[in-house]
Amino acid sequence: MERALGHTSRVLGLLLCGIGVAMVVSTLVRGGGPLALGVVLGVLFVLAGVGRLYLAGVRLGRGGAR
Image (cartoon, rainbow, N blue to C red; front, side, top):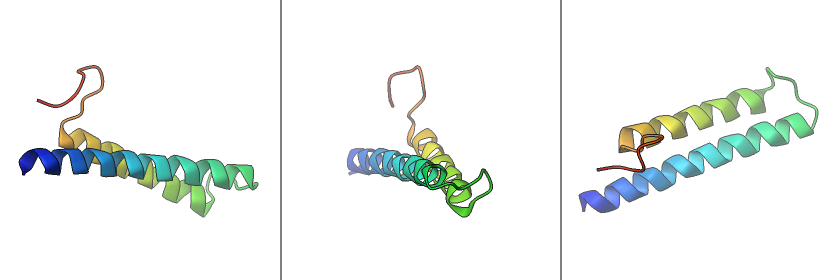
C-alpha cells in the first residue's frame, strides 16, 4: 500500500509541474507579462509539484527513492 502511495504522489507531482509549465507558457504566448496571474499561478504549481516530488523521495541526481 505504501508503495502505491509513493507512486501516486510522484505522478501527482509531475502532473502539477506539467500544468504549471503549461500555464506559464500559455500566458506568455498570449502576451502576459511576468506578473500576470497565469505566470504567478503557474510558478506556484511548479513549486508545489517540485515540493511534492522532493517529499516523495525523488532526489535529482540520485536516481529515485529508496
